[in-house]
Each structure stands twice: as structure tokens, then as C-alpha cells.
Length: 484
Image (cartoon, rainbow, N blue to C red; front, side, top):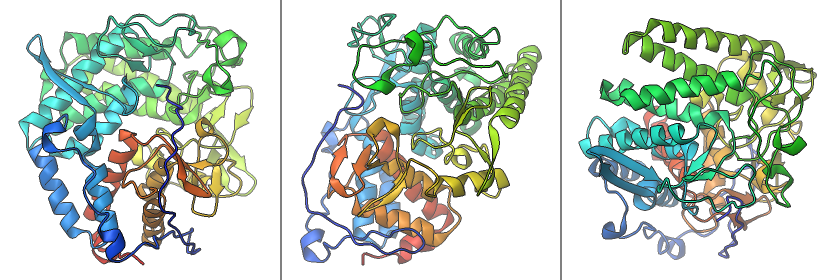
């Protein structure tokens, strides 16, 4: 299936609008009629692809705390969706192996798979089964990276041919799609780093892991394109203009800056300018994490210093070429630049995004440049911040000019320090799930029934992560918020 597959779903329309401080959308289907619909949408236990005792306990504990019945129902459906529907776990050569599909596409994205299991990470020290699931995913990601560091999505069967027969060059066996995205490799580092941070299990850093990490750094350096070129290209016969870079798949010209070129965004859309700022910021974090691992755990000071020096180089380039003074918002990040002074000012709801920088740990919410950028992103100056009858929120060129991403609304809540804004985001998500109890890739700003992707596990588990974050940091919101 294509990642852009368009799905329609009909259900009862919900919604009402209050402007404070953003549109607050609440369900008008209250009382006994809607309560009868609050029946779990989860598969039967014997049909779930993975069952975790700790995740089930978390669901019980969190849902009992949520006063709003609809919100609690959504959490119960969404939070375990990755485990319920997308996991293929087994032992291969005596080692855990976890293949995690994105949902309605039978392939595993390096990015999505990490993000899909991320909300379960705090539980892995409490349950060996869950810990092995994460260890298995790290092992699988290492296999994928060693197969091709430029690929973004893979099949479990590494001998399977890609369904994208028009792609040039043709993907090697085992590769679903070969779109070069910086963040794909960053997510693999993020998962390994967090696993070790939580478990202190250094067995994960085996010979193949070491080879994969060194290949990541080598690929990043190649894609700095300091000589202005790269052997990488990607072309596809398609009517979607964003499915491939211009100039025979090589992308627009760049002036070497020290940043890394990314031919695609986390949405799998081609970049307009190759220096994608949020992904370069993510790369800085990843290189810093690798530096720490190689210095403190693997005792390889030379490679640790190489990673640290590389991170500093990219960070300096971001500050020099990726920050601009906006007429209305002061210094903000551009989304993409080319090094010649040209820049794109927008954001894409996928992570990494500019909005998500505080979520990823690149910025504190109080940092001035982040605050300025966030204010810009939530304004009419951002061409992909949409306002409609049912909602306002960040969009993505991936789904056109009229569809809002629940993921963007979720990240807005996750990076907010204001209770009213968080409540507004929750009410918007309640009003736009189209009576399904799940998050979707995108929905029409004027009609939530018109949505993309009924089965998108990352968006679901990210919503679950948001609810847990609110419970831990602002419990009063969940214990007091009710349907209106």
C-alpha cells in the first residue's frame, strides 16, 4: 500500500467551537447514547501481536484516573495499538528480533518503529518480555542499516523485492523504499541510547551494532556534500510532485555549510532545499549520544571525539545558516535552507519537526529561539497552520492544503506549558477522531469524517504518550476535565 493511501470513513459529526486560547472542539454526543459506544476497539487478547503485563497495568491505572470517559476510551484504544497490531517478535540465531510495521503498510520504517515503541520505554526495566522486544527492535534496525543506510523502510524478509518497481535506482532486496532521510538513522541511535540509559545493558553494543553506528556517521559525512556532490539519487514515476527530488533525483544545488543534506522529510516527501533544519538538529543530538556511548561504555575515545567534533560542526552551521530574523517573531529557525541564503519557512507535522524540538530534547520550552519559532508555527504566517470549522492545527504538504495532522496537535500539547492550551488540544483530538477512538494521519479541517489512514500506529501511541505525560506532570487536567 502507498503511504499516501486515502481512506474515507463515515460516522456521526462532532464539534463545537470556542476560541480560548485556540479553538476548543467538544463532542455533542453525550449521555447514554455515546456511552454505549465506549466499547474497547482493541483486538481480542488471542489476536494481539504482543501482550505486555506492564502495559496492561498502565492502561488500567491511567484510565481509572481520567474523568472524561471519551478521553479514557481513546487512551485505551490508542496507547497499546503498536503492541496490539504491528509486532512480529521471534528469536533469530538465539537473539531477539522485533519487526514492527507502521500499520496499514506491511513494512517497517526505522523512524516509525522507534517512535511506535517509545511510549513503552519507561516500562522495560519492569518486564523482561518488554525489554526483549526493544532489544529485538534494535537488532532488527542494525540489520536494516547494514543492508542500506540510505533506505527508510524495510521488509522483514530481506530477500523480498520492493513493490516500487519504477524507483531508480532499483532498491536492493529487503528494502521497501530508499528515500534518504537523516532522521531514519537518528531514530536508531535514539532507541539504542535510551535502551542503555534505562537498562545499563551494554550487550546491545555488539560488533554489528558498532558497524552500523560507524556506517551512520560515514553516511552523514558523505551527505555533507562538501565537494557539492553525492552518489545518492532517487527517481520515481509518479504524479505526486513531492515523491522525488528534482534534477533527476539529485536535489537542488547547495552551498556546502557543514550541515547534512536530506533528500526527504520525515513525511517521506522530497525536500525543497536539502538542508532540513529539524533533522540536522536531531543529528546533533544523535552524534552527542554516540559520543557518550563510545567514550563512557566502549572506551573508544578517538571515535567519541570524532562524533563530538562532527556534532559541533553541524550545530555551528545550523546557527549560521538556519536561523533568521523574522519581521514579526524575532530570531526563528527556517525549516529548510540551501546555504546560499534561500530558506523555506514552514513546518511539517511529522517528527522531527520544528515544533517537536522541545519534545526531542534539543531545546527547553523556555529557550527564546524555540519560543519564537513555536509562536511563528502557530500563527497565520505559517502556510501549513490551518484553521477550519472543526479544528486548527499543523498540517503537512504530504496530505495537501486542507488536512490537519492529529500528530501536530499532539505535539503542540506535548510542548505546551499552558493548561488551557493543553485542554484545547485534547478537546480538538476528541472532536476529530470521527467516532473511531483512534488517531489518523490527517483529517479535513472542515470535516473529520474525511481522513487518511484508519490504522496509523505511530499517531495512536504518540497520543497515549501525551496522556501519560499529562498524568505525570499535570494530573489535574485529567482528573478534572469532563465532556461538555
